[in-house]
Image 1: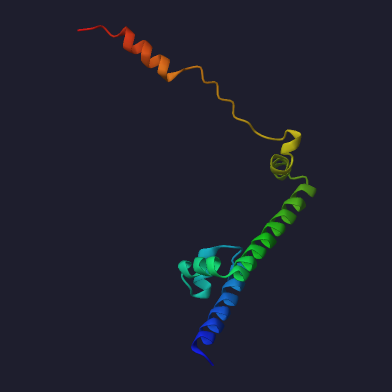
Image 2: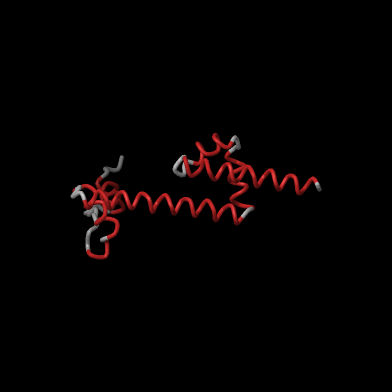
Length: 123
């Protein structure tokens, strides 16, 4: 077997180990790297150079989000007010369930500087 093929097989095996660790660590990259005994740089290089690996990571992230959403919906069904509010703030924005911060800016820094400059007495 060619050396390049051996490297590819080892890399593929390590990627499988990483993906399993990534799943069991709920998407925590640092923890998954430790479990898979690879550096973060290796993970990011794989993400950049291997579209299939990157897609597998993305798929696992989506599964984690789906899982979290299912838990949130369970909390909503249990009448958890905080969960209901959070859901409405994120999913109900089109219906007006958003928090806004109103800033009343009545001071123009340029005008204040000009006033201060004209109020100074000449020596």
